[in-house]
Image (cartoon, rainbow, N blue to C red; front, side):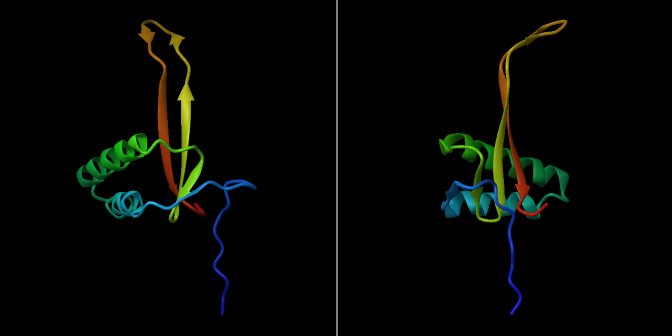
Length: 92
């Protein structure tokens, strides 16, 4: 029997067990080809992630979730602090 391996985030991986969140992430991944449906599923999944109060990085099912926070900066206009959530398939 072949052994299936999955990428590990770190030595102490934060694994989240949340079937609703995992379902939203799977739906988002499956709809990636259809741009409009993908954007709606992406927005839904990210909204659920923001409301889940998680510690990043973490794994949800086959997905590794990380967050990038951008500090406030000055350009030709003022920009507020921001953050973005990245969702990728483990092993990509």
